[in-house]
Length: 448
Ligand SMILES: [Mg+2]
Image (cartoon, rainbow, N blue to C red; front, side):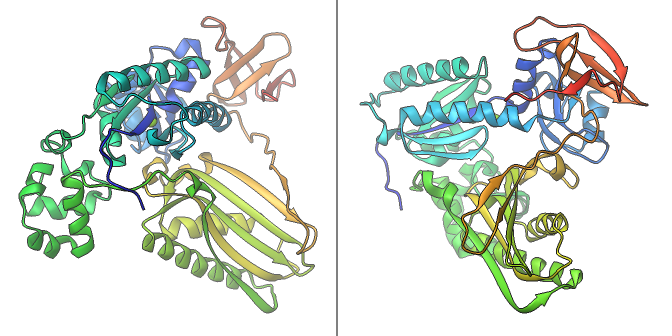
C-alpha cells in the first residue's frame, strides 16, 4: 500500500519507439527511414514503428497488411529479442543506480521511486529537470544512442501521463497541485483500466474527457461501470493514485497444478486439464488486477523427472485463451507418451499494466523467449538450460556473418536466395549482396 505524495517523486521512463530505434542504431542504412518491427508475414501485427513510419499512419498493434498498405517502402523486420533485452538491461541498470525502487513494466518502460534515491534529490521543478536531463544522457551513453521520454509526477498515473506528453526525447515534470488541471482536457482513455469497452460505455453517456468524468455524479457512473470501477475512475480523474512502486512484483507468480493418482497418457485429457488450469490462473490474475508476461508449465513424467517450460511475451496478458494456448504449445514440445504424474500452469512477470496489444494472433511465436529446465528427480534443484533454436529461415533483420564480407543483416530472402546488407552500428551504410540460402559461408551471428 502506498501513500499520497507531496512531491513529484515518481519517475516514469519510456524508451522512444524502442525496437525500431534499436534496429536503426544497429543498421545505419535504416536511420531516418521508416522501419516496422513485427508485421512480417501477412498475419502478424506491428510491434513498433519508427517515427518515420508513424508519419504514414503505421501504429503498434496494426495488422501487417494494413501497415504494408500505408507504408510499402518501410523496412519490415522480424525483430531481435536478444538485442532488445540487452539494451533494456542496461537502461534498467541505469535506473537502479538512481534508486533501488524500480518497477519495470516492459522491456522499455519502468517506474522509479525517487523517494528511495541513493543520493539527496532536489524536488523543485528545476532540480528535477536537471536530474532527468542527466538521466537521459546516461541512457543515451549506455545504449549507444537510444533516447527516452521521461515524466515525473506525484503518482504513477501522473508520471506515466507526463512521459507521453513530449515524446520523443521528451521531459515533462508535473508540479504537484497542477495534476487535475493537466488531466481535464485529456481523453478518459488516459486512465488506467479504460479500454475500448469502458470507453464505449462512457461515450454513450457523454463522457469523453477527464473533465466530463470530474463532473458526472458517482451514482450515475456506478450504474454504467459498476461500483468499484466507478470509484476508481473518479479517483484517477482527480489524480488520486497511491499505488506504490513494486520492484519485487517480478518475482511473484500465480500457479495451479494437479497431481494424478495414475499416470495420464491421453493427450486430449492433458490438454483439457491444462486449459482448465489456465482459466483458473487467468481468473486469479483478473481478481488481483494483474497481467502476466511469462507463462510456465510444469510437467512431472512417469519417471519422476520434472520439466518446466516457460515462454515470455513482450507484452502482458490476463486472457485465459492466450495463457491456455501458450501452455498447450509448451506441452506439445514435451514427450509425454510415457504418462504424466503432475501437470501445472503458472504465470510470472506480473504487472498492473495491460500491454497485450503487442501480440496479435500469429505474432506470439516471434515475440517470446523460451526457456526450459529439467530436474533429474523431484528433489534435485533445477538446472536451467536455454533452448538454442537455429533459425528455420532467414528472417528479415537477422544478424549474420559472412566468411569474407564480415557482419551484416538479412535484408530479404526467398526463392532460395538471401540478400544481406553488410553494415553494423559502427560502420556507415554498407553494400548489399545476394547469396544462395544454403551458402555455408553465411551464418547467423550471435554475440557471445
Ligand atoms: Mg516505449
